Image (tube, rainbow, N blue to C red; front, side, top):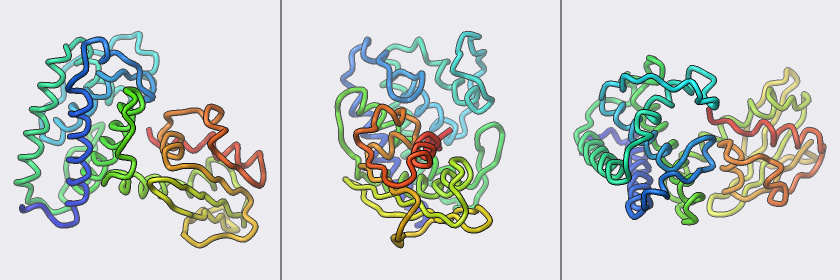
Length: 274
């Protein structure tokens, strides 16, 4: 394979998750494609349409020429409009059409990955006409398909793969967002620390430290006397950080110690996916 070694983990994670998605949706009857998922406002069909659409963009396919209906009240930003286009254009596709296009897209993407010889810093098309590196694009796809695989698993009652290759990529991306969540979004005071103690299939203990200037950093060292300590399982952490559930709905699965107002503010602002 000619794929650059630093891209291999993203390719492996994408492959694992996309094949799991294919396996999950292959046996679904028509009505099950309309079931609502934890991904806000999207059905099973919508989630799979989104996955297909973004992988088609990785293949260089032109974006669909399509006008969104005016009654899509969950679409309020340009980023949402961009993402919704690939979804809405497939909203009337049948189950066989969906599974066929998914399988064909997987075949094409696997071929593309086998023949991929570009360097990780090569520029490729990103959302809204932006340019991003190939490494960032592949990392985004690995993140995206793992989270959407979990959306489908939660909806269909088929739990699993919480510790699959994509989970490590998702963990690292979510951890990188925590300093901003704690220091800026939740307004943790200067010279304070917040501990995240996550257990389950993916485990980690991380401390977000806010310096005298209000800037946040994250490390793996424990903190003595943190302002807040949050203990929760990996699945709940993912659902909160990806905006799949309101903190009140999982309060029994989160152990919060310390300043209750700051803890509540962090949990409210924990959703970091667009």
